[in-house]
Structures are given as structure tokens and as C-alpha cells.
Length: 475
Image (cartoon, rainbow, N blue to C red; front, side, top):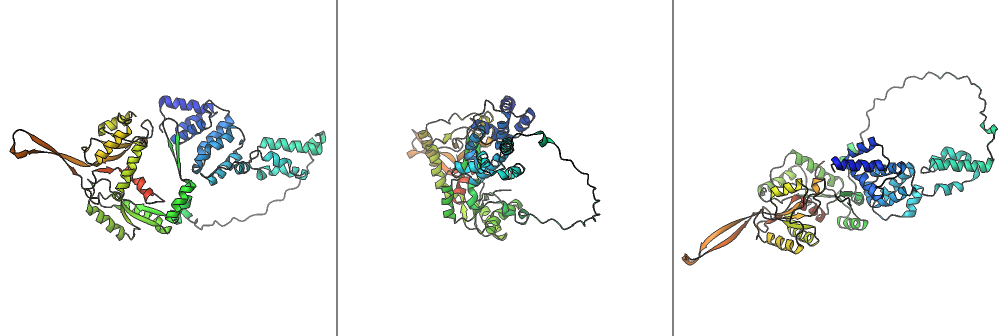
């Protein structure tokens, strides 16, 4: 999200309305991620028209510290903030801790309120015996870390009045203090500096310790911000994760996915270490998967070379697979995208696509009828459309500030068309022109296909089909 010009002024005005000082507001705008989060939080809280500074500061804290694994529950927390049921930093921290553990599971209001001290401190205070009043104020933060200090003082004063009555002048007299002769402290010898080197951290000892276990993948969330202000929050449900764990046996599954378009280099050695190494360290499995979606650049020679080098480096794949093994599934999923209105056949040239992306404009073919796109996509598959004349694109968000959200190409044609002029029976009266398509040969799939999925479309889907738990392409 890159904020510019007039849009920047609007966001600045929005941030000032919630009580941020101008310097903080401008510094926030300089951080794209925090700007997007805070803008979303303000709209979720329905406070675009402004609020008092105390609540505004809490909104800022939510935008910067809220646990990413529990985004589905953020609107519920904001209800408590807006209604001032949560009104101390300690309460907010307790809420973050509680929601981080809950993740995307069911939100239990009673447990949440008890964990955060919502309407709990006042009730519990009145139930304390009178003889604890003296020690209460000193240990109030320890016993009730989420308590409102102002409320605590009022309740302590009220309890003191109940026990001791009105305050008198004698209560204000300071006790006389006798000056005591201070003893000189004994000489302390300088401690010998411990030159023992610091112990390495767990992360330094084990580089794979940063990766979560498969059963914790419910905590992995992604926020997708759309230009209309809506936010898509992607996460595993407990049911989906449990089904996944049954299939995988809760083991780690990784993959080393080179494209067979050349020889491996030193960077691939690092990728092999991470992918194969993580699986080995966790007792899991690592696929060697050839990401073969570009037949023009790929050769059998490179496929053989890659397998040889992987073995030479000492790694043993769980299975050797090819993205092209999944071409039928990828095609059917593309058809389903069209049926659901999430993809369309486009006829823009590469130059036109570039121009429309720069201008954030939709393709003129974007809203064509679903039936029309289905027929054209079938024609593409059967080799009835020339290369470069049609692509399948996914409907994303062409008005987004994130260029990764522009309508990506999911499928393109890789075939050449020829015209053959044949004179029938040596006749001079007519010719018949035959259309002939030569499919671009694929080193693994052969000549079965003339449309090929893009890397952006295929990679994540095949990860899902192979139940990959950790997608570690690079560090």
C-alpha cells in the first residue's frame, strides 16, 4: 500500500480524528503496513468520524500489536475497546495473550472477560476482607494487573473511610525521624570479569527451530487488503487442519521445487539444505518436485542433471514429482474458477496488459459472460486458438496499490499455427486451406497439452495437493 498525495491527506485526517498527534500520524503513514492495519482497525471499530484520544491510542496499539493468528476475532476485541470495557493497557495486553492462544477457534466471551478483567476487578475488590485493605494498594497491580488505577484508588479510599471514618489533622502529621548514623560500607573487591563466552541461542544451534510444528499451522494467517476497503483473512479452521493432520500423520512435508530450465547453482544448495534439512530434522518428508510449467525452456537433460546433483549432495527425496503430473487437476480447478466468476478469458496483448496495469484499469474482457469464457477456455485447450491470442486471467483487484493483486495470468497457449495450401485433384478452381497446430512439446508430459499453467497459479495449488506443511522457497 503506497500512500500518495490526496490519499495521504485523507489518511492523515482520519488518524488525527482518533486523537493521534500530527507527528505520530505522519510517521505512521510512512509505514505502509501499519497504515493499512490502522485504517482497517478504525473502520472495523466504526470510528471513522473520530473518537477520544484514549480510545484512539488503544486502536493504534491494536493495529501494531494484535496477534496475527487471531484476526478473525479482532472486531470482537474492538467492541470492548469502543465501549470502554477494556480501558487499561494491562487489560489490552491480557486480551492479546488470550486471543493469541485461542487463534481462530471459537470465541468464548465469559473466558475472555475473566482473562481480561472486564467488570471483574470492582466485584472482586468488594469481596476482599477488611484486613487486606492496607496491603491492597501496594500490591494492586500484582493481584489485578488489568485494574484501572483511578478506580483502584477510589475503592481503596472508600474502604478506608468505611473502616476509619473521616480523615483528621492527626492523620496528616508526619512522624518525626531520628537521624541515624550511617555506617560506611565495607570495601568490596572488584569482581573478576567473567570472560566465559555467551552461550549460543537455540536458533543459532538449530536453524530449524523457528519453524512451527504442523499442528500449530492454525496460527498462520494472511491478510489481503482490497482497494474497496474490505479485508480477506485467510486461515486454517480447526476442522480443516485436523483433516490435514490425519492425512500427513502430523509429519512435516516440504519440497525442493526447481524449474528444469538450466543447471543448478550454489543458491540451490542452500534451498536444498533448508527443504531437505527441515524434513530430516523433524522426521518428515521432502519431495523433489520439478516445476515444469514452461516447456519452451525445459529439457530432459536438466531434469536428469538435477536428480543427479540432489543425490550427490546427499539428499534422498521422499518422492519425485512434476507439476505437469497435476495438469488435469489444475485444468479442472481453472474451469471451476471460471464457473464461480473468478476467472475470465482475455485477449489483451502483453503491451496492453502492461498499460492497463499502470493505469489500474480492468481488461475490457473482464466481465464477459461465464459461458463465453468456458467455451473459449475449452477452445484454448483443444488448440483452436493461436498462441498469444488468448490467456486465462484470475479476477483479483486491478485498483490495488499492491501490484501482486493485479489480475494474474493463470493459463497461456504454447502452440504454433500453420496454413497448408492443398490443391485437390489438381483442380485450378478451388483450394482448401487446412489449419494445423503444432503443440509445443513438453519434456515430461509430451504433446498432450497446448495450454500451460503459470508458476503463480500452479505453485501454491500443487503445494496443497501434496499436503506441504512448510513452503520454504527462500530465506
